[in-house]
View 1: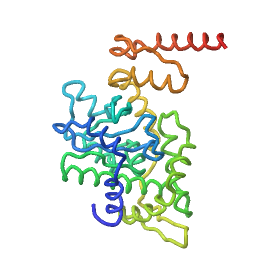
View 2: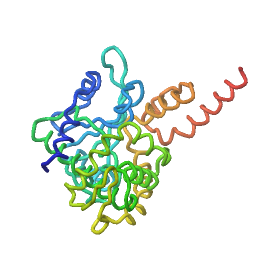
View 3: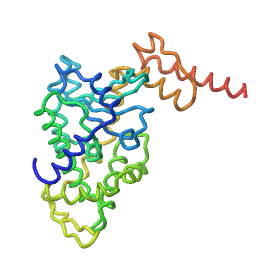
View 4: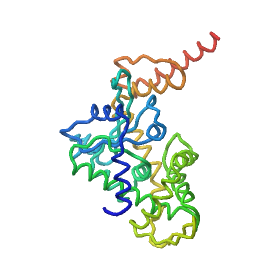
Length: 303
């Protein structure tokens, strides 16, 4: 994909990440398996590296075989949590792993999934790539995500309005369709971090996606005919994400450490990571929850 949109997306992806983030990505990468690693999410927007950094690891091919490989092809991504010493401090990363070809299909809107194009129309950086061809393939997929998201924004947005009205409508509907802890108000947080960027991208993505529109000052009026329907993605959003949560309960690599970190961050209570909790986080969850409740009660009594 060429044109002004592709050039803009490539410039964003190629922009310099903090050296600590780049070093973390290099530590996560497996050159024998991976094609590219993309950094995205709230820590990219804020620059605060004290939280959990979000990455997508795009692989050359599915990395599991047998039954696990079949599940991976149907319900993706694979999710893992990592704690890595970088520059004298611990950086924490949540990594979603899936084949680059699957990422490309989802970005182009050729699946019922909404998460890929809704995430990657937002800012991202390509913090590692195995070679120039892989870097270019990742950029093409992210550009396709912007086009797909813009087409849905035309479908879900107002008859006419400023660019931010279309994006807010899109993000509110995609967050509502997914089974997520964030409310639809997260759309306002996303937009607040880069309203001018989204205003610039929308007409470029409509041009690239063949969506006709009229522009009068700051008001855009898209041609709704031919834009994608929302019924199936809306109906399937929550079931797909529930399936992913159930899968993650058994396959999330590092789930116990991830949960313990989140608990400590939100409650101040440190839960020990026992060998049983590390190996069987789903089975250990009830006991960990009871321990948390007990220690919270003890803390209240000790005040």
